Length: 170
Image (cartoon, rainbow, N blue to C red):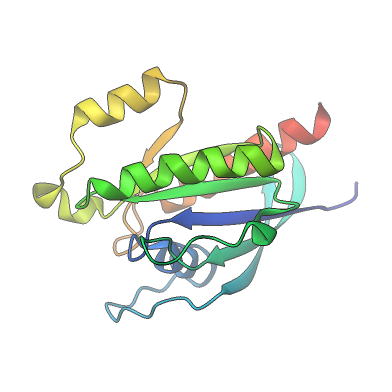
């Protein structure tokens, strides 16, 4: 059986941990040092999902903020995406939802997950359980994760990979 190759975009506000999640997943490392992504960084991860060989091309896009908007050309051809939210910053949830709508307008209703990062800082969270419940009630799949500890990181990528395989069959 041929290996499926899928482009996955990592999206979210600046500083939410997109790069850290990719580094944790692909290389099993975490660094406290913050390095802002300039443009896009692409990593590759090969895995098995739902009985299929899958190569994820992980597009780690720079964070969106009030001064910088995601270049829509980066979103073309994406098979799915992870929306990354910083649990300690409520405004990052609004940014993520706006990005979700942007991707849908460009790529259509492709598979995605919402990843609430920084669960190792749970006492400092501005994202409350009511926010998570509201997202889930609206049909979003939500994963709570920590790039620092690795908690939830493999789950997020695995769940998205299964969705990609299922979408490929449709």
